[in-house]
Image 1 (tube, rainbow, N blue to C red):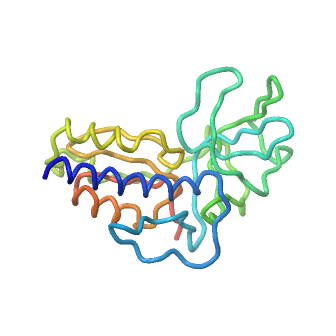
Image 2: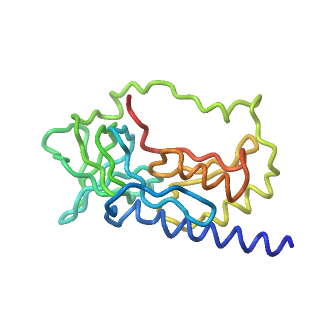
Length: 210
């Protein structure tokens, strides 16, 4: 029974990974996201209103600029990937660097998210000048520790590796924290269906405003 449960869970996770891959590259399909169930993973999720993102904007010569919300390789120039960002104009921002046909900088950006593309609506702010408001996650508090064994959390982490839509993950305080581009609660509910509540803690890199 354990092997069957593990196979079913892994298969469901693969469905989730396949669906979420659209967040990083594919155009968002029309229509509203459907109701999420254990066999119906969320697809690329658009935001209803404006969102805030903090990350690296990087553009290679001849390519569209990208908003990197996950890890950035510490090379020179740096290397990273993310969704395309529309409305970006290097002439209107400060703090950028250029080398070997690549221009980049770190910014707080406000705009809209359609599930595949970020569109700038307000002037970006250099990250060095941005005063971020504290937004603590109660799941970081030792008083709210999860009850899942770290070995099981590492197994779940391995199942989720290799997908561009999962920006990163790490076990801490009894949870597996999973960073994604954007979640309005659908991905968290789906993870709860697959792994149980208070096991996977989904964090959205794009934060709703208002």
